[in-house]
Length: 157
Image 1: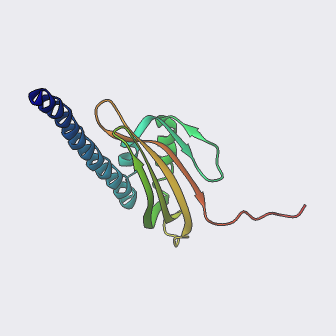
Image 2: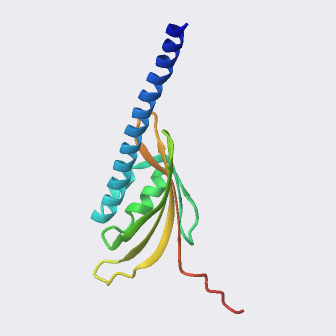
Image 3: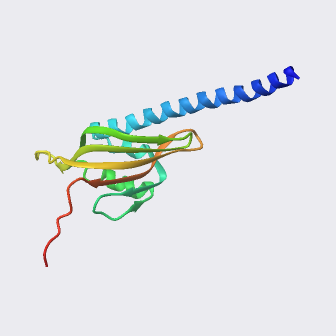
């Protein structure tokens, strides 16, 4: 009887240990992908950002229309890169939830998107990123939502 119990325990614990290692590897890969994403922004490398997008990515920019699909989001990321500068500073991760295939990060930061040669105009904002791990084990950005910390100004009519 004790052999049977031992076999059941070993049969249960070994897969849990392997799953735990897989989960830790998955999280390390996710952290590496997130670092690559923000590094690409720091370098002004729009094409490297595009490479980290899921094919069905959705972009929900503050004050703009929702944009769906990697090709359309790539157009936004690469438009005017010769004439404009997009940068972030003081990014702080506020929260992160993750599983082996999905992750959600919440960040607070300042961004500037200005004409080259002009001084930066830093705006306080925050975002939610949903990352999805594809069938090849690669983490890709599936949803990018952000909005400003500046209050909405209501105008009298």
